[in-house]
Length: 137
Image (tube, rainbow, N blue to C red; front, side, top):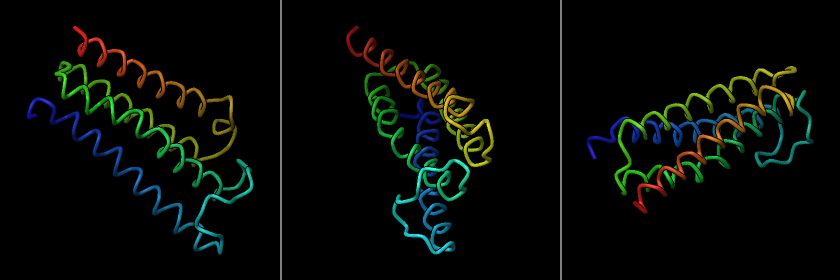
């Protein structure tokens, strides 16, 4: 597993990011007197809504990426290929987070935020295809 150290660290970073966003979302809502669950009106102009949504986006995107990343290690996808995919994905998720939290036009649906989310999904699909290919051949 030593060959996959960079990939493992990247996957752990994604998991940690999800936990930190959960804490940030809950504490932000608590300070504002809002319920901790995702029960805010859909309003990209509301920072609490954006904090909640960036957290939920991270949680929703985590399993479809982490499962194939772990499987990639099990079927011995090239460590460099896997590390590149993992860290490209981490960079996209961090950019998505920053853009969404900052708000403004770039954070609205159909803009930079959406491009980043779709880019992350594309990296996930590539990871799935690569992992499947190596597993079959």
